[in-house]
Each structure stands twice: as structure tokens, then as C-alpha cells.
Length: 289
Image 1 (cartoon, rainbow, N blue to C red):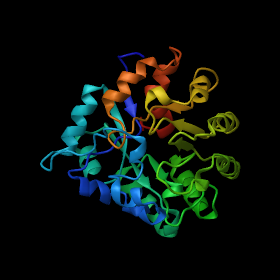
Image 2: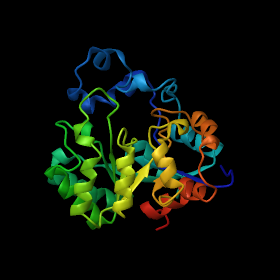
Image 3: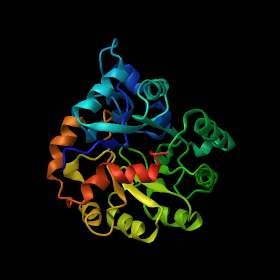
């Protein structure tokens, strides 16, 4: 792994100032949960998958300054993050370092389309994002309610980042089956889609679909580098060097210390690293425009 690349992280967040604030952030899909541990015992619904999550800080913390300090320490030049008061302030105070993406809820109908237009005009969002299994009610990747969102993304010339594979929280995963991507990309050949959260256990299918559809890409969100799926690494080292992008998922699940202590052991070819850490993100999300 080279150390002289200004890294672009496609999944940066901001820490919470209390455990209560953290729990509240996940209430939007609480109606999909049934088990007692998820509902009452965990700080967040996928807690069983992660250890020592670094996302709660003292109440007096300036979370923007906290994130920037972490980015500087690990040579993260730019990042993508969701729209909230902290990210809007971060974008204003640190021009060129923070790029925003907007949640797109298919259950909100035309209001979601209006919101995407407004956020593009007001904040120059670089992507939309949807969590199919986390919608209430759940909405599959290929559901008819998603189609206006895909059309709007094509119109706005932005990618959509969308979860694929078995969902972490204990709720049904059928909305995120990787086979659904095939139908959508057939219907929207001009759409740029970025698969988030692994695509497991269908990573070989994900690779096959990336070979098939020029608009389909993959980011490594929610995975420590030691757990990157082998088919994804093999694809990046062969025909997929333009398709695989780094996403660290900090501080929602993994510390940057963990990410970058594991990262040098990932067996990417030398020519893949600049594309994985930086160049693909700039091209796919048009970060140079």
C-alpha cells in the first residue's frame, strides 16, 4: 500500500455526543426489528458484528474538528458523508474536503424527488443513497417505487449508492439480493450504481454483474480490510481495477486505526492502489467538477 496518496473515503460519519443520541439515530427502521436484543439491549442494531465502535465522544466535542483531525492523521484528503448540520458546516469550513450525499426514501414518493433536486441545487450532492432493508416498509432494489429515484439520479447525473447482500441488523434481507441489480441496470443503462455493504454471500454474482454492466461499481463499506471478499480482491486485480473503491465506515463501525493497520496486508496489485484509494472515486462521483 502506497503512503503518498491523498485518500478519498466514501463513507465518513460524525460521532455522537451520547449513547442516547446514538440509539436515536437508528429509530428510523426500528419497526422492522422483532428480537429483544436488537430492540432493547444493543446500542445500535448491528452491534453483534462490531467491537469497540469509536462513535461516542464527550458532549462538549466539536465533532467537525474531531473528524478533520482524524482525517489528517491518516492522510484522508476528502470524504463522502450524509447531509446533516455537522456535514453542512464541515463542507463550508473545509472546502473541497467534504462531499455530501442525500438519503432517498422510496416510500416518500415525489417528495423524495423534490428533495434530491433541492439538495443538488443547495449543496451540490454527489450521490443519492438508499438502504432497501432499512426502509419502512421495506423496498427491494428492483421495486417499482425505486424507479423514479433511479430516473432522477440519471437526470441529475449523480450515482446512487445502495446496500447489497445480507443486511446486518436482524431484519429480512430479500430487498437487497444482489440479483436485483441486474434488472435495474437493464432498465437504466445510463445509471451509475455503487453497491455498498459487501454483497455477501453473492460476491461472485456481484463481480459477474460488474463485468456485465458498465454502470455498476462497488465500495468496501462496513468491512475491515482483512475481511474484504476474495472475489472482490481478485476482480480488482484483473478486469475490475476501475470498479472497486475504498470506504472506511468510520466511526459507525470501524476505527481508522483498524482500517489502516489491516490495509497494507490486502493483496492488491501495485497499479490497483491509486485507483482503489482515490482515482475511481474522483471519476465515479465527479469530485473534480
